[in-house]
Length: 583
Image (cartoon, rainbow, N blue to C red; front, side):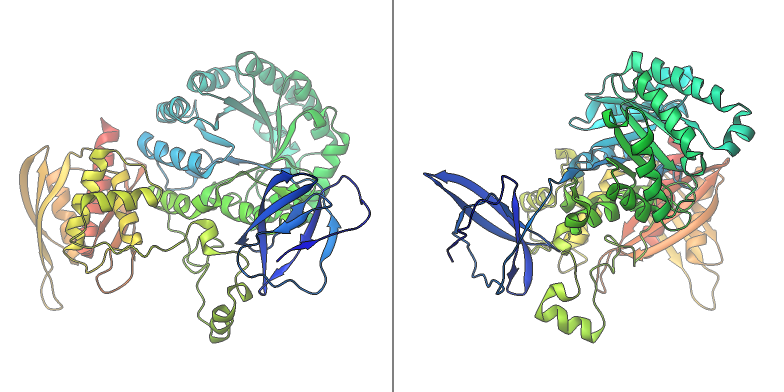
């Protein structure tokens, strides 16, 4: 289909056409090649929630590809340039502060690598002075992860700032994030200091951090319960001291969107030097408004949003990265904004974080929940069959939920499995491929077909594979409604087989008691969760346990088509974490 718009020149501004294509709104990606006095545009349609054809005046459209049906009237409107909103991911810092989460260095690296694939702008890798483990993880991430800014949190204290810089100094693009509380209640009861003293502490902290690192973020803790004029004052002073990012945290999730929008407007209009720095927001979810508040801030001038995968964080959590990003993408014309996030990596990021933290994603969670793209009502199903956009404002493919037609089974070779793993977006070493393939063969002997979900579960299981002190060699259970459940288990302890037996109220308890006898590690089982990670009668079952030892929580995970075996592997995984931590 060819058409040419001939009219008087409107302006040098770019224009947009909203067009309907076979009942669907599409996004057109235009490749422009000048041909004489005409600009040729090849449009490659891609289905999205909403989209625009954007091009200069006086063009000719050709090579449209699939058959397109335009509506009777094409609407032209002038559009403003899209603002780029930075995504500051704090899953490894604020997210890990969720009750019951304790990630080791290897697990944090795995998440950081995935965040780099997701293409976040900043990774807050931890709080360097909080613990030796946090420091080591930040340092490891700073050394390895490229193309992303790596950040450490620090209080407005010299020792904190020095420790943060020590962890970050090998990063390609380091960022020190320092903070101090600014609300009356915090200044009075936490610091017992006057506002002038708080300003002085903030300025000195930023100046010292700036002497070490070129990029400094300053946060006013509990900003939404602070005096707005005091915020303008302290922000103006730290900007003069060298801050490059000013962050406005809703630390206790107190704000509502209309109020927060006005606050952002006020700060932008009344803070000296605010136009020279990036304005960031960090919203908590205590009232369930973290995402709404973050989006209200973006609509009113915020340049950066701080968020976490799956909305993890203190108390009720933080703004969920996947929700913020997809809201901006789906309603880009409203926000006049976009992000650099590779949205096709969202689902995989959510799965990895859920797996390593042991925190399941609720089924009806927006964007990444298992029901997010599920349709059960008959009316909905009928609409979906006729046109998927009747009940979907985004596609599952847009977050990485595409399905493969490749069938893997017990006759599949290592090369086919390796190729499929790479297509799914995972980069494993040859040794990790060998381990995954061995478990694939074992699974394929039990299942007729190994799905992508099965394979991803095996790969995620490989992420936790470290040489363990205790390895499962053999187990046998006997149970019934009129017998006492008993279990016999044989573990390899540093390669040496040791066997024990025990009874319990059920087969799982019997297994766990027998393991306790062998390991001599005393733990309290806080949580036990089981779910099917794939479908069918021969589905893989995943068990996640949380145990507590000497006041510390450890998460263990096991995967098998046998739930008793999965339960055993999960418990052993947690025990091995405890042993490594003690060492």
